[in-house]
Image (cartoon, rainbow, N blue to C red; front, side, top):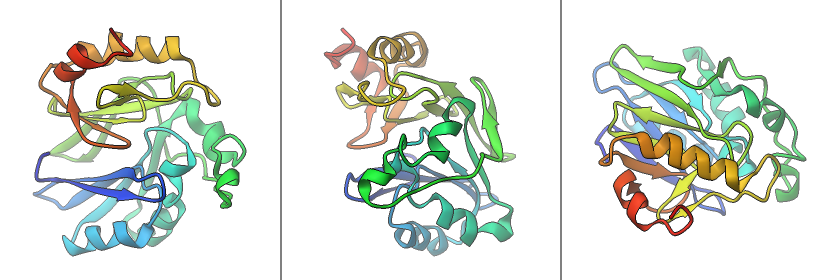
Length: 213
């Protein structure tokens, strides 16, 4: 993993929350802050980072549980929430983001930055992420490509596995197409940072992922 990316597994499902920051400006984005807000904040503040975005790969409760805390805590930075346009309903509805089943009803505002496929998120002049809409796990599930070196994959692609397709907005055929047509078109040596579990690479998944071969 690159030195400007911090991994913090959070919550009962050990969701991988990532913090990616610009070494020159200290501006950062928090990707999928699912729980344990104070734990995430300690990492941010320990490096003197300036959060300017919360970016969501999708809207399931284990990826959004600490979002409202982050938006309030860092409001003086004019921090923005970014998510795909097809995910807005899930972000707002505790029934379909499944937070109500976890005992904590989570509802988010409409994102400040409503994403479409190909959109660029500019964390700083030197740090930009490209949006790849990869539906199949959810309607608006998305991955984020950093400099053709790292892919934040959410629950789309895991080490030798793929995301569930049996929940609201899920479709295995759609998920498979998202991965094989969009993610597998990326460079083989891109490091894939998933929403749960260890990292992998595009090359490894092309060769070893039984769900896609």
